[in-house]
Length: 265
Image (cartoon, rainbow, N blue to C red; front, top):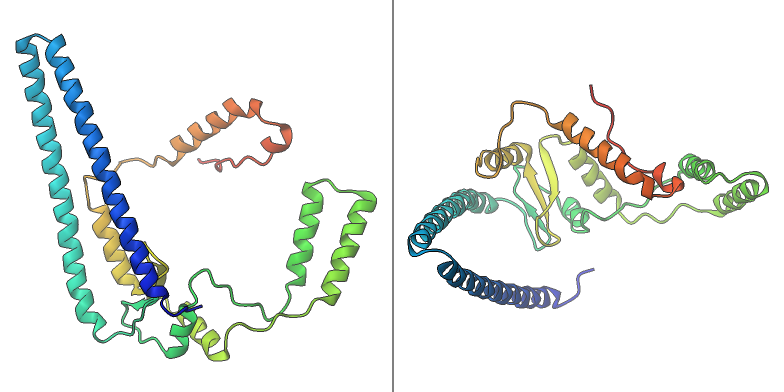
């Protein structure tokens, strides 16, 4: 629900949180610098003058290389963001957007589509029919897993049957136009509807744009490394070894519900 003045409150809260994070990072940097200075003095006392100069030179060069690498990485990210933002600004002139929905795709969003997307990606449309089969199946599965037998199982089934007989389909929380617009978006395989990294904004973008962004991220060799083998089997084997090692400390009713990786060939 859109509350008057909520956007301004959120902006002020975001600014205060950002200032708090900056102050906290500065405090951490000051503390690290103090610890480094203390270690520097301790090394100067423990090491000989020649060894200390050699060690100080190595650490200085290492820090310089790390700083240059971080600067290059940040510059690459900035250039990518800058180029994307320039293309996005030129495209957004002909697109529909508001505070909660940003359309970066080539698809024109109708008013019903915007109203439906404004509800957020956690919004669940009310079902048109009560899923009796699904509910009954879940109840039977629960009875089986919890080993409920005899009178207790029959009583549970009767109680659920009474509730289902009295149940009525909920009132629709979408108009027919909004439902049709969402259905049209779902059928369009050239468009993706995603949640923004920060905030509750819903982003609509082309699949080709999304693939291009993912390719740009994976091309950063400082973060990702291409391997010549599939590490899935190794990770699965190590996970199974950890489960076998620690499952002895767990009760039996917990062990049978542990998630194990599927067997790989």
